[in-house]
Length: 478
Image (tube, rainbow, N blue to C red; front, side, top):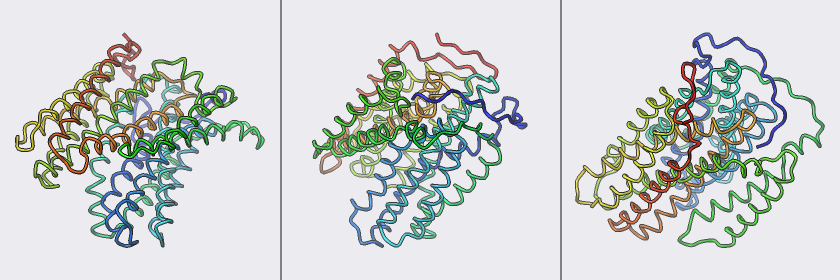
């Protein structure tokens, strides 16, 4: 996470539509950009059956379209953060949405499944540029205007991602039903164009960078570090994805690559991951661990509850969707409240306790027990998702410098991906061949333990701020 000397941003007039400089003209393309990865993650589920039928594939082969986006995102988020640090976040954001647009066009026209996989990889790579670049752009403007921590903007990022996660499946269903599965790829074209045009028009240009030779540029990029990071992360995610049949060689490769990465990055002049700084910052390590634990708990709960509702409790897909609705509503409402007020520590503790409550409720639920406990579960998960997502993101913001924020934000997303992918193995191990109440109860205790561990880590971490400074607030780190 080490980077070149701080560059002074190119001057630009403050955003005329907002007294704090974070008006909609500036934030809209950033919010749109940060939603492009999650919306592509969810929409594709509605097209897998049609893709499998058209290309004569099995369900597992078609599902690889989901995996490739997660894998590309986990590797490329920190990598794009590194590029944003070196060459400027605006350039990287514009480049990312251009790659996304190319991926959308390629998927729309794909003649075979291999080209479709390439399209998803491009979509994963392009969309991975948006979050770290957007965080860097927000940090740059906040420091230039001396506004403090723009908690409302960070909350908007969180809310926007939650909205598209909710709307992704129904939107994908409408598009695939009306125009076929290729529409799920083509929709990236207008979205990328919107993000490109609004960014180009309303986001200040990056300051000119000093010229480097090819050799110095490659050294600054740290290609060896990027390669070792990719091998370790991909190996780990593939290993965690199927612990019912663990691929021990992959786990060993991931471990050896992680060791080699640590050794290399300690000696690199411009490392992708500044392991020395990370070793010194126990607070930042705890933030990453919390993000992974919360991601594991929330995704395990969400996927397990929907499968249990339909596979054991006898609800239809439509009814299950309605039962899951409190998760989204509560999550978005709470994220808005706490981000407006800049609260961090109490929401983080409350969200972790709510995760433990959701797990305990899962452990007590029966398939013939009615609607009360399922609704309590989903509402509790709404507390966790809405509060922890914003609070962890804001904690990361205050724990990193302006030079480190892009790579740190990308790595933050990587830890979230690790939790999300690990959840599939937890569910498989608990349910086995079929969905049962007993398996659901086992999963509930796992989720309760994750919530309790996250609560303990947060309570013992005195570096988490009580609240953060905004345009009209002062920071409180007590």
